[in-house]
Image (spheres, rainbow, N blue to C red):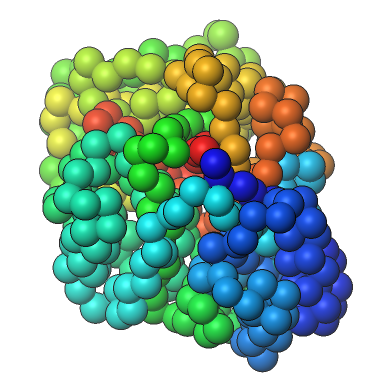
Length: 389
C-alpha cells in the first residue's frame, strides 16, 4: 500500500526550513520506508540556499530519491504559502514507484528532449503507458514548452501528461535532482496504472459567451470569425448587454482557443491577444491558429473560478469512485491564489473539503500542463490536480 506524508515550514534559512518540512512529512507518512521526496522551495532561498534545502532533505531522509523545483509559493492540503522562504516536502513510500526521471539540456532541442523523456517513461512502465501518468517539472527559461510537451506525446500518446513550469526569483528557476539544483533541465515522477492516477484542470478565466468558429486564419492571426471580420466579433462581445461595463475591461480580455465540436467544462486554452492594425484588422493570438478552431472571449473571474474548481473536484471524485486517493500534486498558476481571489489558500481549502486531509503538495507555477481536446497543452491561469494511490 502507498504511504504518503507532507510537511511545510517557513524560515529564511533554507536548511532549517527544509529540515523541518521533511521531518513533518516523515512523521505524517508513518513507519513505511520513504522512496521519493518531492521538494518545493521558495525562490528567496536562491542558489546557495537551494543547496542547503536539498542537503537538509538528504540528511533527514537519507535513502530517498529527491526531485522538485523552485517556486514563488508552495502549497499543501491545508494551506497555500505565498512566501518565498517556505519549503514543502511530499514523501512517498510503500508500494514501489518507478525511479523518477531527469533530463538535462531541454532548451536547445525541446522536442527531442521531450521524446527522450517519453521513451524513458515508457521504459519505466514496461512499455505500456495506458492508464499511467507522468508529472513533469521543467525550467521554463528560454524553453519552447509546446514543442517539449509535444515530444513526450509523440512517443507516449497513451500517457497522461501533466506538470508545470517552475517559477523563480532573480537568479531564475531551478529543478531539483538528488542533491543539486539544475537549470535547463526537467525532472518527472512516473505514476503507474496500479496507482490509478487521475487528472483534473480548472480555469481561472471564464468564457463570456458561446464559442465562435474561426473561418479564416494565417499564422497567429485570426482574420475571420463566423465568416465576418474578426474584430467585429470582438466588438459584439464588448457590446453584449449581458456584460455591462465590459468595454472598460477590454484590455483584460483573453482568448479561449478550442476545437470545433469540443465539449466539456474547460476544454480550451487561454491566450493573450491584441488587435493587429492593418488595412484589414485582425486578432493576433499568442500561438498559431487555423480555420476550424473556435474562440471565446474570457476574463479572470474569481467567483467563476471557484465554481469551476468545485466542478473539477466533483468530476475527479466521480471518476475515481471507490479509488480513494492516497496523495496529490497541485500545479497552481502564480496568477491564481491571492492575485485571483484576494487571499491565498482557497483552492487547497476546496481540495481538502472534497477529499479530506489528503497528503498534497504543489507550487505556484509559471505554466501548467494538462490535456485539452485530446492532447497535452501548455496552459496559463489554470489549476491542475493530479491524484493517485
